[in-house]
Image (cartoon, rainbow, N blue to C red; front, side, top):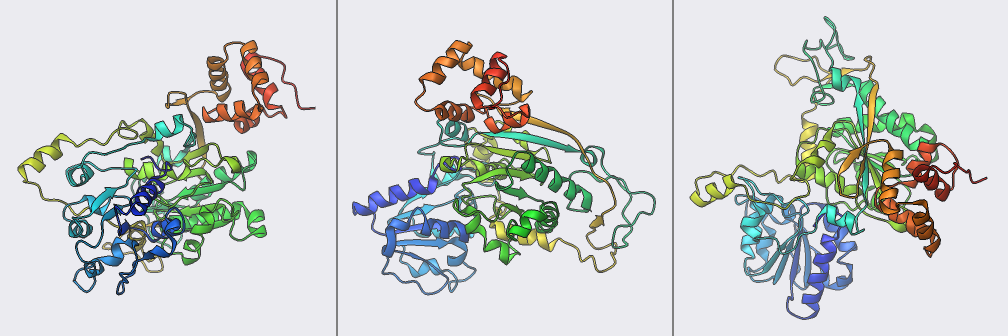
Length: 513
């Protein structure tokens, strides 16, 4: 099921009904991240109340009926760390695996051992991003999906928020950067003479003004659209980049930071203060934090319902990771007027929307089936790192800039005096067929309104016949016609009715006055 369509809630309903009926008496819910486990405990599974417990890495209490556990807490290299073996093999009747595309999908992973140990229990795998390739297959273990529900379906049915995409092109991303002869970075290191491009930025070469340009563009956009209190996630290359981005955002939004110092936060695995704010950021009734920078930690599973802006400034090539990132914005929260979300893309990652694998059914590749049949393959170690571990590994790659570089050390250069500017920004909108189209927003709006209401009389009939005018406005926003965006485009104080009549049917642009 697509992110945001309620996998955990569905899992709870299944578990609850079977438990109440006495069909399944003891249930294990497995997650691979503390935030996901805790979110399940306090959220969807909370009706189990005193019958439920969280399994830690200590001796287990077998008097409960519902157990929530982290793979990492109950497995290890030896039997003393394999906490799950404190339970008998037939202790659980039902095992539910959250994010089952990860370690449990790989035959040689340590996590698979847990599922095989409790093989007498019914097992349900939950995922928004199933994996099917030579190394990993959900289908080979769990079987064909019993139910699927896609992002496109969710948007069409009104359960998920539609989106628009702003693709921002920076000059250095197009032109690349080549140092001048004998140019040194801010720490006095001689920069290797070659051309650096988008793949290098923030990994082997840090251009300070590039980060500042990204922070300024997004901050200016939020100011212009009266969205400064809209929750926004910046996905960065690594923890260090997230820290630099945070500082750039603080500089751009000093007035808001002065009001509340949690307006901008870095939420990465190495930042305890930021990690402690995850719950507040996810809470739809909590105003702060507003702008958060991360690399991997918020990419999956964390239920960020009210996020309205997703900023991508990292090179994402994986369809799975991309779907997880997009999923942070897909929740609809009508009482908070969160009816759509905006993706601001600085690395052309949104090209992946056009990939057939983005919203298609998970299919086993021919290569997988052949090698599986012949059993001649050697599984690679599936990357079963949690986001925290992945972030820590990224951080370990960071060089110590206080020491001179030697030819044997990984090189990263820090350059603060190279100007970076925005060459162009393209806005793409989701049409009625679920495709991203690039055209003038006014032209797009006119075409879509006329597709639904061919004449002004048709539109007037619908408008006057609607019990509440907001019904038509909401219907348009679900189809990708965003009233706030129209206001920003027309730059006049128009009533929504007059604005739509002006754009679609060439009526005079009457202001509210």
